[in-house]
Structures are given as structure tokens and as C-alpha cells.
Image (cartoon, rainbow, N blue to C red; front, side, top):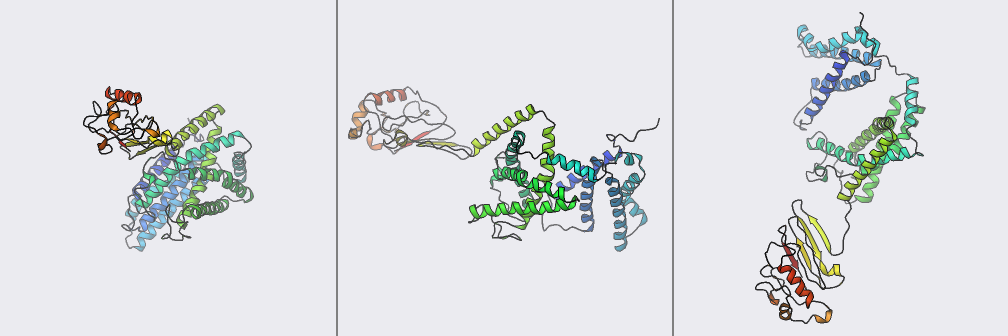
Length: 467
């Protein structure tokens, strides 16, 4: 029975080529990362290999899209490799027919296969026609519907997602700088290398700007210019210019001291705020967003049900809110400050400020613990202590129940049970431990009784008070 070569899902040898192309591209790019700048040179063969990577990427895409042009491109480039290889070896005086045949065997197979294969002729049939372009453009223009809830819902999700993805993109960009593949300054202590979920909202804003501003420009250019290449090139230039102007405006407003970035040593810089290298990088990223990523994302979301997308929207928004509250929101309570060095957390409490005017006292808890200060005039009580009873040297001081009671003697307060630790005296207040103002009368006695019973005992931290 005759074989059917017309089924576009059965690519046969072309599927094998796609796998080979993708593996070669990934491996070559991955190995290129480890080439340190100024420690290697590219010879003719290396340049030819990198050109073949570009050719393989283009061929992969054209086969995937079943474009008829794939056949012509692969045959032309295979023939180009054969001719260039022969010419190079002849010029070097090192030509051998057998060696040349062994070096060019893969290109010869590609050329002959795409020249004679019935499957290639039956499957690769999609043309680059005006009709196809018009249909694609009408579909992409339909994505831009700012009067609908779905448009803004998706836009909010893009902001949230790309605020985090932008962090990863910058890390990848700085990795190229780190290994010397791009010029620039590598800072190992930058926020980029820690907290991988830390959102960079500037990239979220950039994604939104691409959709609201640059995507309509791309559609306009495609609609009014009959070619594909010219609108792409113009769009790239516009994208790079707009993104560079945004960076310049941010730099003039926030970075006049060059604390955030400094491009004064970079080629093609302007005022040290923008440079040619970043302009090109911005242009590439924005062009990918407007021509590939956004249309693909919208096409994918339209294939899902409305309930699924709305549910995903709720999850993305809450997830992004969690990151914002973890990294950006810091509500300052009067008299309370929390700091962390990554291993230990310190909580400082200014009791006087919390109580609105009494003498100041503060508590500090280290090692991940917590401290609670209770006062009717400044007494500090720890929610935890490694001591079985009030620590040796715990202080006693003259308390404030009212301002006119300042003159109360510490001995009188100690007689009423006010935090009189072993060997403590009014004179030692502030030297060894917590210093605070004690309660007069029953308040002081009650707190002392609680402390003696270790009602607040916890081995999680060590408390210190400062008057």
C-alpha cells in the first residue's frame, strides 16, 4: 500500500532535524557562557558555526510553521556551507576531496533530502502570502480591546508576572557581563542575586507599556507597510528609542548621583544615564514582547475558558500581593522596630514612646525571639528569659506611677516587691540588664510575682533593656 506523506503531523526526518537543531543551539550557547572575554579568539570556522546556529533556528521555525520557504532556505544554506568549506580549504592549501566529503556529509544529506523528498513537498506548503499576513494581522489587532474587562485583566496579570520574570532576565543579562561576554560592571552583592521572587516593578511597567503603546505601533506598521522585514526593523528602532527615553527620564529624576547605575565608561553613553548597549538590549526585549510574547500569550489565554482565566487572575494577584507585602510594605509602629541580618531577628521596643510620654525604656530580643514590654510608667517585662528567676543583677529603679512620685526611694519600691533581683540595688540600675521604671504599690508587686513564677519564661532569646 502506498504511504501517505501528506499528513502534516508526521514530519518524519524533519522532526529528527528539529531535535538535532534545538540540541545543538542549546549546547553551543551554554558552552559559550564559559568563554571568558579576552581569553579566546574566533577563527573562521567558529564564525561559520555561529552562522549555522542562526540558520538552524530559522529552519526550526519554518518547519514548525510548515512554511514552503523552509525547503529553499535549507537547500540554499547547505549548498552555501559546502561551497564555503571547499573555498576555505583551497585558500588554505589544505584541500582533499575525501576530507572535504567527510566534513560536508551532513550538508550533502540535507541538500539531497529536501531536493527529492515527497514528504517535504507535501507537508511544507504554507506560503508567505498577503492573505496569510492579513489574517494573522486581523487576529492580532483583535487582541487590543481596551474597552473590555478581559483586556485589563490580562494586562494586570502581565504586570505581576513580568515584575518577577524581569528580575530573572536582568540576572541572565548580568551573567553575560559576569563571564565577560558583554561589557559592564558586575556587582556580586546586588539584590539581583538573592531573593529570586523579589519583584522588579519597573519590568512590569515595561510590559504594560509594550502592550499599551508599542503593540499598536507594531500593528499600524504592519497594516500600512507591505513587507514583514521593514515593519519589524522600524518597530525595533521605535521600541529601543522609547525604552531608552524612559530610562533617561528615570535617571535624570532618580540617579543624578549615579548611585543606582553609572554608564559613563560605556560606549555610546549619554550623561552616564543611558548607553548604546542597553538601548539595543531594550529594543530586543520590547520587540520580542510586542511581536512574539504578547500575541502568543493572548492566543493561549483565549483558548482557555473564562472561568479558568479569572481563577488564574485571582491567584496571580494574591501571589503578587504576598510578594509586595513581604518585600515592600513596612508599617512602623510607634516605639517598635524590627531588624534582621538573615540569621537573627532583633525587636526593639521603646516603652515610653508606646505609652505616650512616660520615661523611655526599650527591650531587645535576639536570635529569632520576641519581647513584650508592659508598663504603667516604664517597666519592661520580657516574654521569655533564660533565667529561672529574675536574673542576677536585674535592676530596680524609681518608678513613675505619676510624675510627682519620681522621688520614691528604690529601697521602698523593693520592699513592695518591685523586681528586686538577687544583689540588685538602685545604684546598679542600667549597668547589667534591664533598666526601667517600676510600678508603685500593687502594680509593682504583681509584676514581680509574675516574674518570680516565670510566667513569661522562654529560652528563645536573651532580653536586655536600656533606660
